[in-house]
Length: 379
Image 1 (cartoon, rainbow, N blue to C red):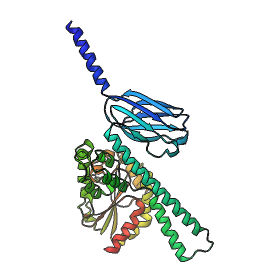
Image 2: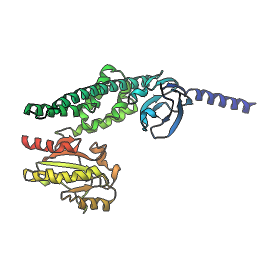
Image 3: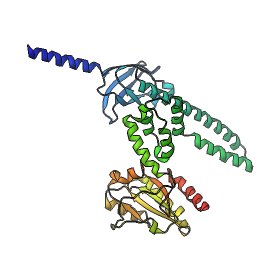
Image 4: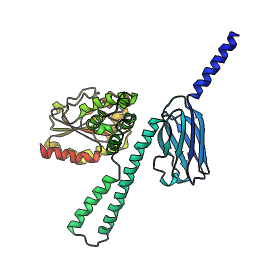
């Protein structure tokens, strides 16, 4: 009798536990005859899926762990690609509408989940600002076509064309920081801020992001994402211009260290690279042709590799004719240089002065020559 009661209790407990994660998704994609939708965890494991048939899809499943997931969907309107968005799933009923005419927009999602509601609001602001930028680009294109139709252009027209092209380039990409600021301003008490900020390029301006982090709600700051982000931003803020450059882990190919001060340079470009990265390698040629001609002004380069294979590292140095100091700890992505210098992707660049103070972090190599010229004009 005791065994039977125990089994019933276990069964009852399992039933109650299962119901706590029950999730129902009722979705529409107007005009879509057929397609598919898959929900995966952040590690890429498929959790559940559904077919989109005659503009509708339905899911009834159990989510064991409430949290952030990736929702992927594809149909004819996605033109052979799979659209992926992030969602927050927990117990409850979700109503999702995917507009095939605006396939790049975030779906309209309503649910009892506060975190998903805030995620939807953030993406709505992002989509609005993206559409506004697109309209600006179209208007700029119209002005440029008007000027371009003139056979002989005046100096003023050429100057205007240059300004329009620069403005077009700026509006082709939405500024993630500005989108985030707009969201934070509109919803200051949101709990998803830290999670969203983690996906932004905060490494390029950690001080500005850290200042914005201070305005987060307690819920956002004390979330797991918030605690992790605060540690990273606190460390990265030490990489602001004027701050002492942190240590660089690694040795030269012959096992020696490099003392930046002992190089006796006014300005040093730190080039974080990898032998298997094509962009890194291409930029080395630009360093040789565009920048090393400034050596007589006190310009120098130190390259720091994220390689793991010493032979491949040395072969790339030789092939690229990198006749300047080379460092690596041969730990690849496990190198402490990644965390110490806030490097999320390769290549990455810093400018350091002769006193080992940070001058600037430069996100794109195309901006390095201008940053170098600006420095020498001022010093």
